Length: 186
Image 1: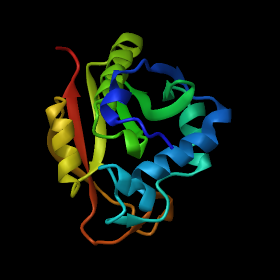
Image 2: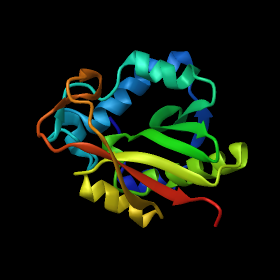
Image 3: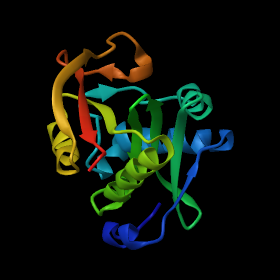
Image 4: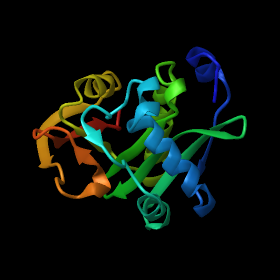
């Protein structure tokens, strides 16, 4: 368990690399700890009050790693994984997903650094003009965080996959995914 204050963690050197098959167990654990169960309550991105069950599984993480045009960016500090995010090339846009920061390190600028690097890499490697993501529409605090990073709400929603426990077990009936978009040409 990391006991460093979040602001110290944000100032340290980070390394970025593509995930490999051997990372799957650690990445599943990281994503689960950031969003589900009691461990997620140490951070502010928890979905524990709206979803129970899993956030991802080894097959889902492996699929992101192995699908052409998709990457799972691993963020390390001092040899340990502290964050990750999915980048997927979709024509003139990139999709940003599976974003997780170790709960004890949230709130100190690490997530801001990771998303900025993901945007930089998507522009540099794929020449994309926009970054897209979907966020559960009732996650107002999280959406506000993305808006402060330049993302805008589109009002375009897709239904939450009720009944598909690969996405979790909903604790309310009003869940949907909203598309957020950021222009990367600035």
